[in-house]
Amino acid sequence: MFLGTHEPRLDEKGRLILPAKFREELSAGLVITKGQERCLYVFPSTEFETLTQTLRQAPVTAKAARDYQRVMFAGAHDEIPDRQGRVTIPQGLRTYAGLEKECVVIGANTRVEIWDAQAWSKYLTDREEGFADVSEEVFPGLF
Image (cartoon, rainbow, N blue to C red; front, side):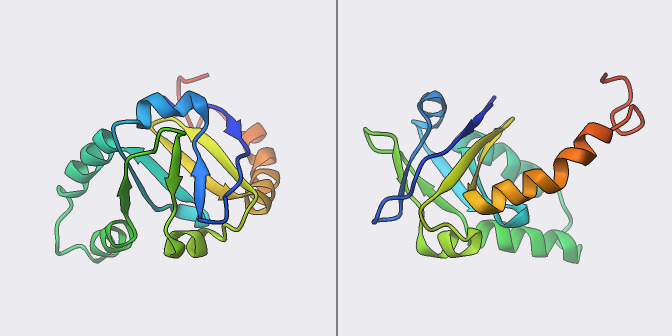
């Protein structure tokens, strides 16, 4: 499980240092791909394989499923972090997420998300009130 918020920077080669607390789980390999809301999703390779198996269950005749899979898999980049915990984010993915230098890396349960720092700040500001207003009807029996 990935938790927390971290603020690494991209270097001039488009590399990002993964937060130390995430490195062990990602050390065997990871997949970076386009996420929703213009962030990047980072999955441990094993978790990405599980997701792939789930997506294979969707009927190829369902247009929304085809569209989702095309975007996710066409933008995917697999990598093994180097000894310093760095990963290279390909230019196409950096452009998609608007990543230049200041980034925010968040733990999002089974995945990590990489955000442009300003985009994350705006997203969080826009969503925090709704988070505070979530009621029992949204997650029955959870709280």
